[in-house]
Length: 206
Figure (cartoon, rainbow, N blue to C red):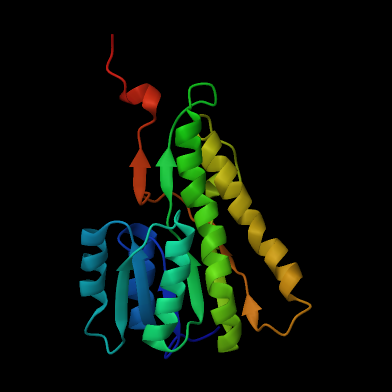
């Protein structure tokens, strides 16, 4: 996809950071926007920044860890825009803790968003992308998907997995006339959609 005018781009985690910047940039290039986030006030701010550029902007509160919600959103995007050409699986959260001190609850919370959210977004939008004849799935990984960092084992695990997923998708789609491409994005530091303080640091000191 070399130009975005008239295309429809869906972006998760659009209420701040990379998601907001992508929305503003794509809108400025003529792409219609379908935006989602769990942060409704941040999402509304992004919508306000993108409106008035001659493109259609729709938004919806979506928790990417909720598979039915992601699937419903994908369908509503096509209902609102008649098609979708691009899904950017960008929503992400942060968690700093050692493996020993990290609770299963915290580990599962991060993976449900940073990894499973990407899986849900890819699978929910793929049929619609194929139907458009020109679809792209952009999964946002991280430099933490390239190198391991102390206290970032959960985040590393999720982002390493996200970095690998486009390679698998490319090999799978190469043999089909899907018209889909799976580019990946490996950004540097950016504030996450929602940082979390692990339980062991939330406890009051004794």
